[in-house]
Amino acid sequence: MTDHLDALADFACRTTLADIEPRALSHLRHILADTVAACAIGNQEGPMRKLLALQQAQVAGGLATVLGTRVQLNPLDAAALNASAGCWLELDEGNLASNGHPGIQVIPSALAVAQQLGKSGADFLLACAIGYEVVARIGSACDMRMSIHPHGTYGVVGAAVAAGRLMGLDRVQMRELISLAASSPIAGNRQGMKEGATLRNWYAAHSATMGQTAVRLVQSGFTGPLDGLTPTCNDVLFDNFKPELMVRDLGQRWLLAEGYIKLYGCGRPIHAALDALRHALAPLGSPEAWPLADEVERIELRGFKFLVFLGRTDIRNAFSTRFSTPFALASVLVHRSHGIECFTDAAAADARIQALMHRVHMQEEPSFSARFPAEQLCELSVWLKDGRRLQGRCDIIRGEPAHPADVQDYQDKFMALGARVWPEHRLPEIYSQALYPDRLPSLAGWGLAD
Image (cartoon, rainbow, N blue to C red; front, side, top):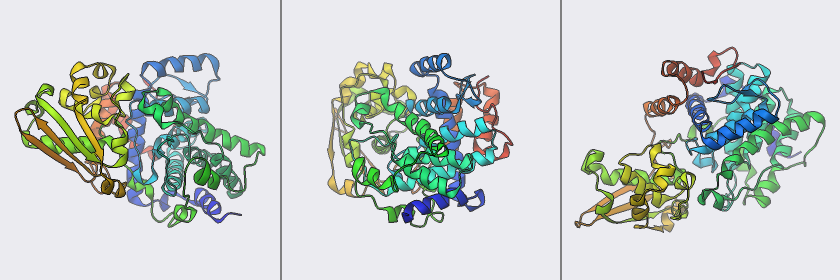
């Protein structure tokens, strides 16, 4: 037997809510509320509504909620829809230490299984914590290839572990599950994301569905390799897998506590540029005093590799706006805000944004790249046509553990998104239940729109 798989299986089967570091459990509560809102608002998007209609006509019903709708489906399809929707507006949480987004890989599957089985909110909360930590640790122990999108890769293992814990798998089954799930990833192309290909949003749905399917396969007697994790993480999708790092201090140090919740609706590396832009504009005061687009001669940026990698300017739709650093900088300046209105089809077609975007010049600073992900360094200059130069810098993105955002920011985000889905008078109750699901004896029917 392989020691690192044994350690993961032991952790998955033996951990209780009382074992979770308080700081990690507190952060998980905010992740849950944030993910619920991201899934619910994402399910309002046109393609998601059409997909839901097709699924309703062709699949079996069940007790699992499609968040933000009046529909309940079987756990496979409900989890897939919620996972895809949660990625749609690029508002889902993430974890730089894990090189990805553990929450959206794990939470939709755990919620669907918990609802289908009639589990309590406490059971759901624990399954999410365990699945998230497994995902985060796998991602932290290998080098991500820039060409591979992390959704639907090691997230399958986390979704499987969460579902397996809710279904009561024993240690031997859990070890088999981890190996089998690790052998069942999808190799999503990150380039499609930059081009605005919304297929990327389905990659998280692969984690949700394959994670649950892996549990069923193990329960049916299917087997995986003795160690399916190492070849996937060291040869097939990623490089330099370090299993000893993955299990070091497992159950003592919680990577769950080291994630972030997004305050901008775009790819996480871009947040460094937007924080630097806010720093540069701060001396001007309120957004009304910010320069107009045609008053900006150029914007110069030095940043870490991944920030500069997101440099496309051939923007074709709303989705592609969320993965372009030049577009984000231009759109925030034009809109004089940082809200979701900056990343829409209307914004993508705005001639002012298009023109300013092409006056953004970026270059990688190798010393900044060497300090990523512990630091997310970016230096930015806005050169105005009147000769002024506004300078800004980001060392650590706002919302990272070393630069925490205010909890009120998280609540404000939930309320702003939730108001588009649920009646205003219900928002405080839904938010409280999302933060404290362990107060609910059952999750039956939870998350349905009125």
